[in-house]
Length: 227
Figure (cartoon, rainbow, N blue to C red):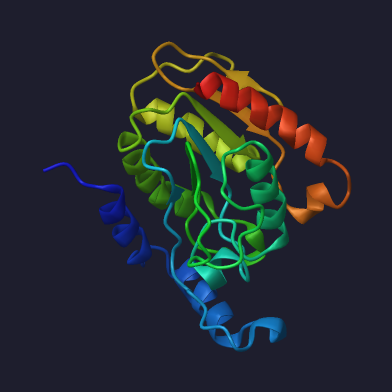
């Protein structure tokens, strides 16, 4: 029988393939941030989240140490998620503009959120070998989202993860290899349009490198392509 998204989620949450990431995510979950001292941190790899009938896939970098690593849901519980879900709500893709916890009732409509790395990495920088070990999870999720029409990559690491996924599917990428940029697009026959966006991290949103208007435009472009 074909596997389900729920089965992939369980496999993600049980993964202990990367010792450095296991040690870090569990240390953060034990020590906690003072503001969240009463929380029971998730402290495990974070599965994808969203609508199984999604036409738009968003791919991020990795869970935030005190965001998704605490709450157990992608982009939930930190400033990056506040920015992202507000935009998804404006676009009609999320039922609420803010994500606080994985049981807060928020639902995505026509969208699914994944990541290149499923564990919170030290310094927010996963190693190449760690990204490679995580890559099959993205492959498995995409295989279970047959309606996809577009993929929005949040940052250069996500862009490379999606290009890697396409290469593993046997698709010939253009030469030279398409480079990440905000608003970059890659259209290949028979696969979803790939669109690039600056990541929704505070380093970008608080400095004005990525504004809500900029993100709304690139999100709208991806949503139109998704159909």
